[in-house]
Amino acid sequence: MNTCPWWPLLAVVAFSAFAAGPVPDFRLQDVNIRSNREGRTVSPRDYNYQVAGFYFATAST
Image (cartoon, rainbow, N blue to C red):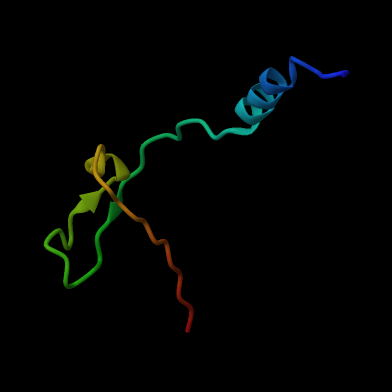
């Protein structure tokens, strides 16, 4: 049986090469009128170690 014992290592290296790294911090103004943070700037880092979902939308008229 001819197997390739190094393929798991190759898979990890290939995945690591394309994995996203950390991005610079950014802050956006909360414009949701129903939010308790309305008018203040918020950052994804405000939610470290919490479950969070982010939705970035655009609108045009």
